[in-house]
Image (cartoon, rainbow, N blue to C red; front, side, top):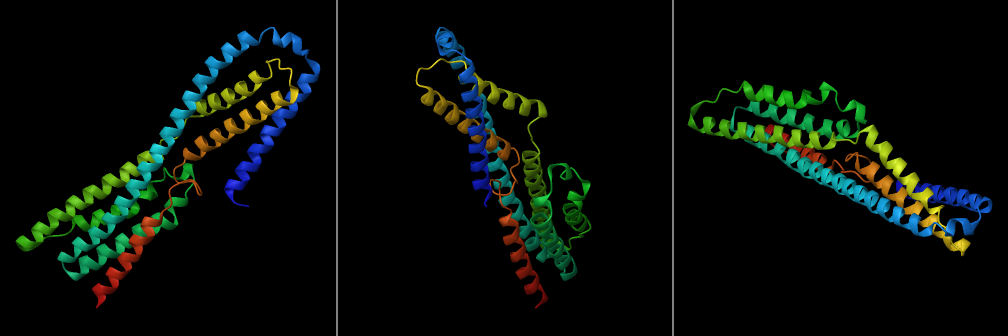
Length: 259
């Protein structure tokens, strides 16, 4: 089954369980007692519901914004890898080949390894080894003549842009929710559903239907928020395809340099 089907089935199961619990509680509570407090319960529920909905909306917006930042930075970073390799062709073949190979390893590492790391693995200093390697080659270049000097300044500007795009991507993907915020979201969802049990409605099945629908949509939104918390998560996250395309272009460039 696809991740989307698993999420929908799991959400429906949670909604069904909460509805069954509501049905069991309904048998133990006299509806008339709850009806006397419907006005107060509705006022409190409306205030809390609006507040909780605003929090959910802000978190969804924040998560989508982070995802967009990662996507844009990935496209820019991968494109700059190709541009750096192209700029390196202004120098001798040894430097040009070395720079292209290093950029290729950079793109392949991001696509094959870095993009699939777990959250706790993304703080590893090994993630910088490939961009450091590109910088090491750039720093040892000694331009000869005005043409190479001009090309070298352009190369340095590209490297600064490459580092900037990478830092922006890493900062966006690492801006995770705190454990406290996750706890607040889960408690808020539970309170939102439990509050529905405090109303007294004559139409029992309609009341249970409300419980099922509210639980379903709240859990679904929470799943979306937790999924967006990792912009590189498989399925809903950003795909590393720009790096695969960059690697393909770098291989073609490398083959041209050998001719």
